[in-house]
Length: 121
Image 1: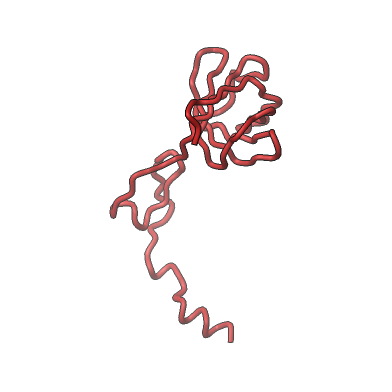
Image 2: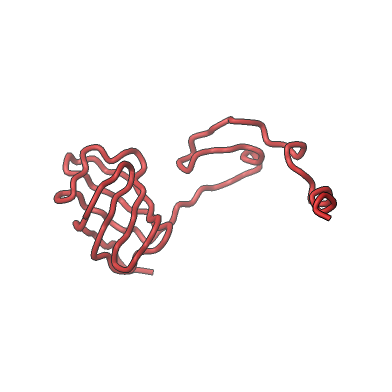
């Protein structure tokens, strides 16, 4: 756990919704970041991969207006959390709470454990 936010202006590349950051100290997988764009917008992202002192971040909401020189990234030391209740059982949703109703999930859509074991013998 950090005692303060870490801010970086070391964006090395932007590819679609992905932002590559270098010279990062103590990032965590799944950590949420706040991205301040040069035009004043604030975006949210999540650390997807860490390799040495380089970090790959997925930006939620697009990367339009970001650049490698004036974009700053603030590491929050927090991970994404969502309160869940009985109403979400059997539903599919996006990571940002956008409800998707692709198909109703029920127990009849899945193979039971006992029948799966019988068919492999």
